Amino acid sequence: MNAGADAPLSVYLVVGEESGDQLGAGLIEALKVQAPEATRFLGVGGERMAAQGVSSLFPISDIAVMGLSAVLPRLPLIVKRVYQTVDHILETDPDVVVIIDSPDFTHSVAKRVRKRAPHIPIVDYVSPSVWAWRPGRARRMSAYVDHLLAILPFEPEVHKKLGGPATTYVGHPLIERAERLRPGPGERVDLAGAVAPVLLVLPGSRRSEISRLLADFGAATALLKAAIPDLTVVLPAVPHLRVRIAEETAGWAVQPEIVSGETEKFAAFRRAHAALAASGTVTLELAISGVPMAVAYRLDWFYRRIKDLNRFLPIATVTSMVLPNIILGQNVVPEFLDDGASPEALAATVEPLLRDTPQRTAQVEAFRRLDAEMQLGEDKSQAGEAARIVLEVAACG
Image 1 (cartoon, one colour):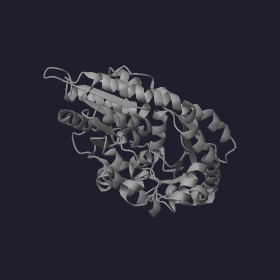
Image 2: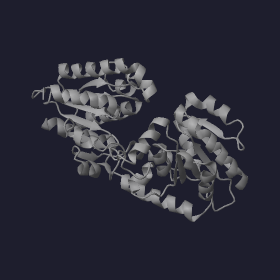
Image 3: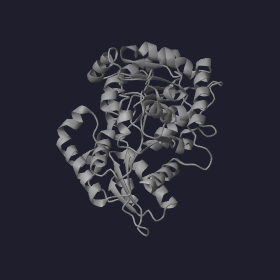
Image 4: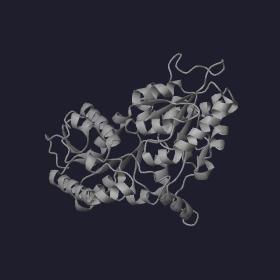
């Protein structure tokens, strides 16, 4: 540790995208409460961390890219930023480094810091999905990560079994905002009465997902409209794709109500009776909101080849692509992959979820169990628990 008896604690944070910036800002805020002397915050972050006093080494837009086609043209700059970050960490010699999500970038930094400055402790905030993809990463992480802060409750046991670093569940960001997802009085009308059911359609937040799923979701809603004439469809869209989605849904049998922004999206969740969704974090949002769902996904050509390879050389290790199913250890949410995601199959599965049926009740009850499993306990917060462990690791460094 570089801090003397009277020196402030120095914390270096490295994030690679906006979601990590949000976690980083919350962590800094909690550290300021728990350790007021920890006034020296350095690193790579975005606007939220800047508001907490971090002057980012470079704009995170330089590295916040996803997908092979987007990464390749920017690879030389990303590699440059990795080495620039490592050099800055060695120059500033912090008491602890916290890497947050975005493992392709942040873990590249952590490995090099551990090799060149092994005295600096490293905390990883958000586990890579070793439980779903390339489980060998867990054991390799233990060489350069001193403590892992998990946001899914089953991850500590997974890392223990796989030989990963010491891991603590600190809570999921969605649990901190659960009240925004859960309906208040009168927001979600009881289906037992003669009401028009509300269906959420969530085809994804990326252009590629929408290209693969939107047409099938539209055909499924047409089948549902034929069975339930008073059906209402609401489609939350990310702002930069709203115009495209409006154009592509203009000919749907039931015209969706398109909403944008987190406030309108969560309001739609609180109204909805069921959902047709792409696989992703949105399935956990729906579960916390108590919205039964059917989930679909179509892989691109590269991941289809990986899926084929997995039959001979296991790479993926889970039996579900739906987060609530993985957390519960039970496939309560029906899921459809690739050619199985036909409009007919999707409509047949969603229709009973829009009525007062055993299928609907089974999912709602399962989501209550999931909610209980994800809670941290009274008087605990995600950022507070994360800050507590960061301080412990820094003190032992």
